[in-house]
Length: 168
Length: 226
Image (tube, rainbow over all chains, first blue to last red; front, side, top):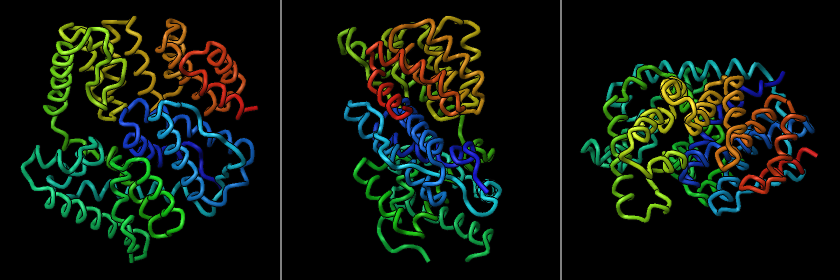
């Protein structure tokens, strides 16, 4: 069993892009670094697909590469991350693609059931990349209240996911 | 039971792009060792994807804000334009790409304003919307290289690689400056993702030999491919 490349990128690209944006401060730089890291990962997979132990290993490799490339881009050295002997492999046990899709669908439904104000907070934080300070200035709500609300929203969504996965 | 390490509480900030490089590294190193935080990171990754797809969250985005942001960017450009030498580089907004900055050097230009508006969906990460808005813009300005380039990026982000390749090819062929280089670099990476290594290598060799801004990237990626 393996996870399709597209599924892997679709899952981790938004997070990787945000992480790179936090380091470079420039949207197009962040996207380029993610693109480069994806190329590095693809090359590593094509070279030796058996060297990664798990999906998490591949994810960690991908995010670390994004982070390193973003840091170098910020320092204006621009180059690609060296590949060395690090590589990945994406064969994983179980129907991971379906599992990821189910998790994302469950989260999507849960987001749809949030109160309007919470949906707006999610939108501002996760889609518009606004800081709590910026949201506070725009809405008049204190930063501490926004922080508490954000934690409560994440807790609620986590609980929904735990029920979905039968943990909890 | 969640991890008691303070890094667990920082992970949402990693996901929304608020951590600098050292903090990101610390978070990623912790995630490698911590099962709970590894699970939390996947939760946040899935949440980002779900938020982009959830219509209720999208609808929570007041349209007036997007227009306000575009107007603010134009106003900021005007202020900076008046304050600086015309040849200086403008810094408008971290979410506005550099080609928009270049165009905003003439902030009273209707074309620059129209381009800024067409780029508004792109700046907020709405790539499907960006394909639509930039396509509309290109109907009126078919030779506008930056618009075609960023439509290519948006098409790729939306999963339409064939259209993205067409746009990158067109921009790469039309411009030998930074914009064209950037388009060829994007095209090479696109080909690599599709397993078209020979075509990617040919483009990378051109970039390397041209000794432009993407030459170091191209050289290293060629080394990796070899």
